[in-house]
Amino acid sequence: MNNLSIGQLASAAGVTVETLRFYEKQGLLSKPQRTDSGYRQYPPDSIKRVRFIQHAKQVGFTLNDIGELLALRQDQNTACADIKSRAIRKIEEVDQKIRELERIRDALQRMAQKCSGAGALSDCPILEELDDQEENNG
Amino acid sequence: MNNLSIGQLASAAGVTVETLRFYEKQGLLSKPQRTDSGYRQYPPDSIKRVRFIQHAKQVGFTLNDIGELLALRQDQNTACADIKSRAIRKIEEVDQKIRELERIRDALQRMAQKCSGAGALSDCPILEELDDQEENNG
DNA sequence: CTAAACCCTGAAGTATGCTTCAGGGTCAAG
DNA sequence: CTTGACCCTGAAGCATACTTCAGGGTTTAG
Image 1: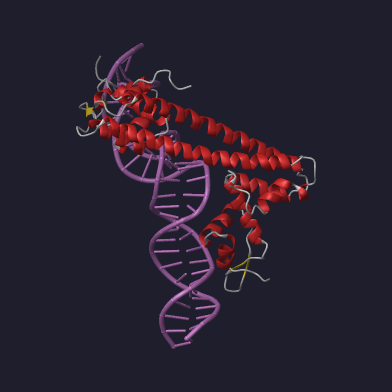
Image 2: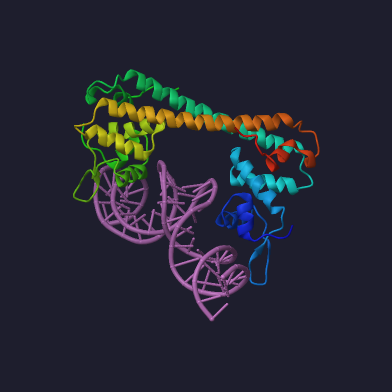
């Protein structure tokens, strides 16, 4: 298979051409060769690279993280353990976010349960709690 | 107690003066009276209002949500149930985010477990999975 | 040969919630 | 009467991940 135009790469990888140009600007995709008229020409394995980026995003890595992963991958001195430690760190980050959201959900549920939905607005337990809320959150 | 300068309100409510001006611009805080020289003069109960905003933020409401809550609160036609339904909707949003993060965490954990951390980079199961990842995510 | 489809660039816009900056007035203490 | 703390404004900047825009060249099908 031969080189791909940016549009072909985009549809093969499931992104837009603007996204590809953006990734290039961010350094996630290396600058491809150009035709005489200045059109980008991607080698076929760019598809894999773009998919890697998408997959890494789907598991919570930021573009910045992904840039680091890609750099590690190139580096002779990288050990598999270096990649694993990134994953572990990301798991911790995600866990932290989950706990925070659970705290939020629980606080909301507590409020919603206090509120019958029938009373006057002036006695709404939810609004009252949002007014006061001294020590509730933990 | 008397009126407060913006700096006094800020420290009483635990925010910065810039935040207060920002909230005013966003319509979360009504425009206060001014002194002859143009300084803002807040009535003491502004402290409650700012705290309400902070508490609502802590339970996951966006500033936009909060603006709506504050408007509902003013409105004669609002029922307590209207507030409750906002809370319920927010719980659903938060639950959705939690599920997404759990999906991410589980995927990362699966990958990290596959990787002993000892192998060569070229065989790193994490990188391999990020390359391929056809159907793993659920 | 023309029109559609595709490509190029740099800059600005989107959403969120502020923060920082530039450039100036005002107020209270000494 | 000066100095420092405090206040004012509008605009720009930050982080994230793109998208949209303005304005213009290229390629391909008919």
